[in-house]
Length: 410
Ligand SMILES: Cc1cc2nc3c(=O)[nH]c(=O)nc-3n(C[C@H](O)[C@H](O)[C@H](O)COP(=O)(O)OP(=O)(O)OC[C@H]3O[C@@H](n4cnc5c(N)ncnc54)[C@H](O)[C@@H]3O)c2cc1C
Image (tube, rainbow, N blue to C red):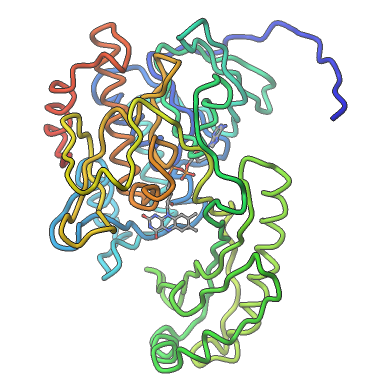
């Protein structure tokens, strides 16, 4: 590849904080609020103009994995969010989990950030970091205000993609694109006769399965199961197809997926009009951002693998995830060490980029579990600030006591 030389220049340090959170998804806001509630001064950087990541911008409107099938395994910040949404009539319990209204969640997260004095930079992309030996010192940002620097004492990477691992040479795993989990563009149809549609889907599984033909081996359509009635009258949400072979850290792949996604949505929208309940339906909107399931996973102080599940309960547990591998062990614990990278002492990772194997990712990447790792990272960062230590040296007992006080289930 040809290159050019970009001349160096002075970049203004526009802000400085105890804790700087990169990425304002469900994990970022969980980490930011948890750190702020413990007294830390917190800054949050988000590339879009709202908080919530996939939950609000990818319209992943279903909170899954709150229970192990019998008892609740995630509470803490996630439960507080559910309670607040329910108070706004914007969340409801369904057999699959808790369905919520994404606009209400955006508003709620704005309020939580404001109430907890979190300094937000919207429309700001974090693009790199400057480190001094084993300490990250600055994050470089790009926005309409140009290139700027934010200084931090502790950074929490909740970008989903673990971007700072790339910038700081932190070891990570990213599979070849043909092995990565697929991406999806979700969408909503309005003016659906929901009761008739539900009945039709139940009675005609074969017809639904054969409805869409896409002659592309990289695309799987899953119309039978990939839909849900939302909280809005006459509205159905679809998470109904997978695009494979996409590396979401490659901008050309991302661009292709957005365009391909809208093409498939169009096919589905046209095809379902022939089905009972959908005769007068129309496409309300596609999600503002493509839905990404997997990219970088750091190789941290501990990497959680499938083999761990058969006998382990970790002493440094900071959250739980449901165990889909075994009927006997209903949930597993997530060690704090999965959040701690190798090579840099003052960054924590939370959300889908933590240190787990590809097989285990499916267990920890659901929003409630991701939020729980964010809560642990935020709490740990605040304790590290309080005691003047690095996150890896935080006293585990003190961290766990604080999490339990926040009603987290370990
Ligand atoms: C199609 C699909 C369906 C799913 N279904 C479910 C489901 O039904 N139930 C469930 O519980 N989970 C589901 N999931 C999983 C869940 O949505 C994600 O794993 C979860 O949102 C991960 O949270 P996160 O905060 O780590 O990442 P994200 O939600 O991706 O948030 C990352 C945030 O960081 C921001 N960001 C990234 N890089 C930068 C940067 N360099 N600078 C500034 N900002 C940045 C992004 O804009 C985003 O706001 C689904 C996921 C997908 C894609």
